[in-house]
Amino acid sequence: MSASDLSVGFGQADITPPDGLLMCGGLEPRKNVGTTDPLLAKAMVAISNGRSIAIVGVDLIGLPREIVDLAIAEAAKRTRIDPQAIIVSCSHTHSGPYTLEGLYSFGVTDIGYLRTLPGLIADAIEQATRACQPATMHIGRSLVYHGLHHRRPRKAAEGWRARLTTRFYTADEGEFYDASEKQADTWIAEGERIFEAAGLPVRNGFVPPAWLCNEGTLAALNKRGYQHVAFLRGLMDLPTETRITSPACVWSVRAAWRRATSLGWNACLAAAQRSNPVLRVDAHPVDFDFPAIARQIGRIVKDALQRRKAVTSFEAVRVARKCAKDAQGTLG
Figure 1 (cartoon, rainbow, N blue to C red):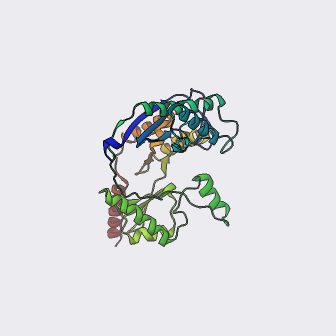
Figure 2: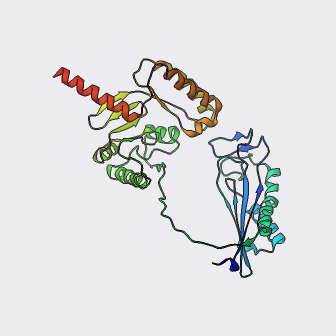
Figure 3: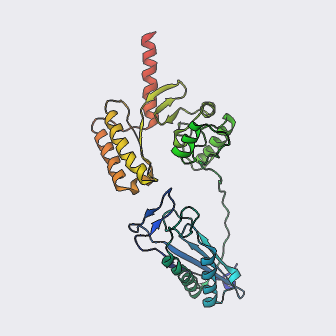
């Protein structure tokens, strides 16, 4: 579409709530104590042949229909854009305020904050309308892999151990917990294709989500030529089935009680593992959002590096494989 047929403009409004409001996205509400990045309503308005459309992206987990309707009505009044041509979509951020009452919790929304949103969303659309200027539209296509996730569907007949492991411990993650060899092979192959397309190496090691891995998954990994697999309590060299006992220092941060428990558990675990040849520290990016967790990770790693060498899991398994072969030669 040529520039003479199309005009496009962009606008935004800051919708960051005040400190102290409850944040959603976890298993329990947590209080907002500050802002790292502002929450925004970003609008694009396009005009062609006398017709206009507005698309707004809002940094919120969701919005009630009545709030969206008010925002659209206000924007239409200010810009004369047809209400049917205004689209409001939420990013579903898990680091914003509660906006939907009763979906996950009750008594968590702030009415005063919600009342500001229609006007602010309309501000972004109005700003984008005023900023419209001639533009040229180009179309591009890209292959996107969709549907890879760690969700494990719940099953009707599950024992207490399976329920405790897959619902409480992992919050319904851990798809390799009881996958068949065929299903595990399919999922692993999908991941390999993504890695190969990005030029990344595959078939060295495998870390199943939440370290939950059954015999079917191990069989699939062996057939595909993987060298080692990680478990919560250690590593295994797949070709020789040599095991390295090394419980991982790992943190769970999705609830306050989990963070507190993690701090106590890992302090004890790191001390108990001082004489273990291999110390594993498995940190997630989100762990560093919590200062106490970040400090403990730093302390454990700094202390370990006084006496140890930092290596990858693959290197640790390769050394264990060599030691196992040397021991077999000596015994023979």
